Image (cartoon, rainbow, N blue to C red):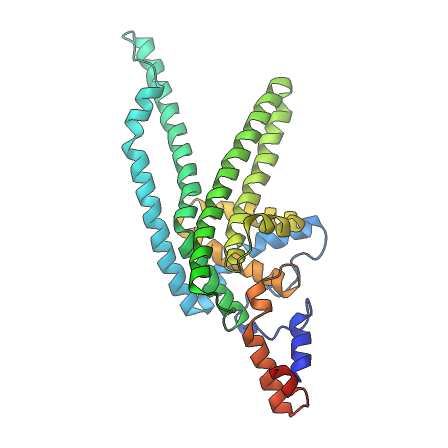
Length: 319
């Protein structure tokens, strides 16, 4: 195969992919995830969330990096939960009324205490999950880079050190912005469902269930897939625009990922799955990874193929 044929196969969506490690792919990850109707895309996204462990086990260096990232993520979770535990008493004292002397007042106060503790820790765990991503964003970005290298073969065109450090800072800012977006959107959906519940209770419950669930799933998928995109210096708003055409896929991925995301050790594995999904979208021409598309490794492979063929285009390719 000549260098031109190699480049043509490289650029053709859904065509021969000479970059990746085909033997290391997970079952079904060569299929176009955006093929078919909305329900098929939701299913494709849900199953894509499960590919991470299979891929990591097939690539020991990815597995090692995943374990190290899991340890860091778990440590950050531990620190945040410890801080929430420290301030539990002061927060409950500020929220609860004074305990009365009568027996019914004591019983009512204890019931309110139980509800307050439950709500406090639900919010604490939610905030811990939302805040942990910005704090561990650089490590999760490095993990996504390792997964991409293993899936596509070789390395992406390297960024200068200053640009790389800027990209890491941008990753932290992106994760913080998405966390704020998740909290703001969640509060807006909760307020709307509460308002609708006063007018028509079933409608409010349906909005809270479906709209709230879809919003959380979409936020989680965007956060996880975004680490691979951030490595290619793609800004947050461009990421959102690129993923807007794949809403059913992202919702399916996020819905399945939510089942595991509450376990701190599962989040790095989900980043592996999300990076593999970004790679699949790249393979089929739906999502450009600029540092891969312009990778010098592709040019070198084309030149090597031309040199082996002895074709007249060798000199042109080198030039």
